[in-house]
Image 1: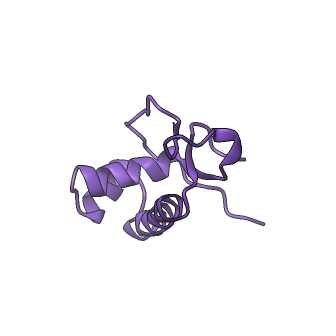
Image 2: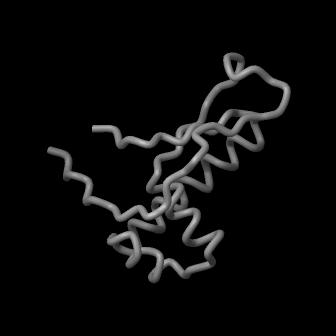
Image 3: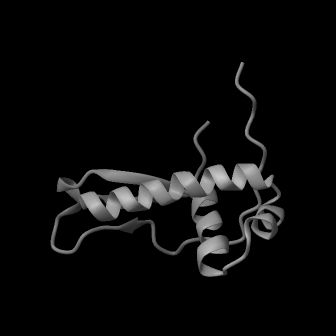
Amino acid sequence: MVRPIKPRRVIFSPNVIYFKPRAVPLSLLKEVDLTVDELEALRLCDLEELNQIKAAKKMGISQSTLARILTSVHKKVAEALIKGKAIKIRTTMKQ
């Protein structure tokens, strides 16, 4: 049995749900999905420059969970940039 995901506090709500390479139709691109909690972790740590402990407290999760989220989101963003994929921000969580 899989352990249920602990609810995560997300303050930020994105206005845009897609980023893609210029001059390439979205229909021709592969996508990388980002969740809103991944985007929030990225915002808090990389944009707001909070350390992982403070960012984790703001999100209501442990520092180790935040570190796993950051590792995942950094890999996804790097993949999209290097391989020319679109980034889709999922505003709902998978069940």
